[in-house]
Length: 67
Image (cartoon, rainbow, N blue to C red; front, side, top):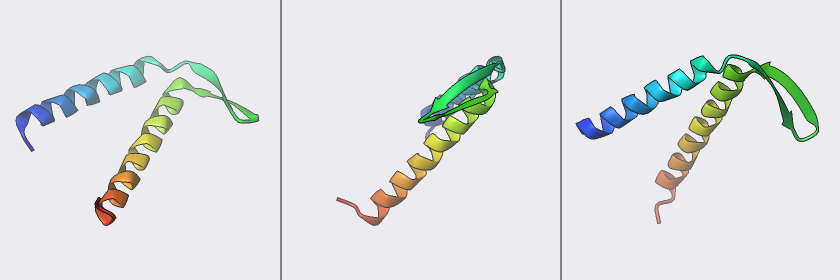
């Protein structure tokens, strides 16, 4: 991995961590017909995790079926 890519990853990780730590208040989130109250940090971390898992699944699928 080249140094530029590593620096970009580290900067994004730091910015993401700062954003998560600064948003600890409780928010109400609506998902279809449900309404859930949770700390904003939990919402941010769960959405980040969902995006990460979706990215892994897409990359696995592309490796199996290259076009």
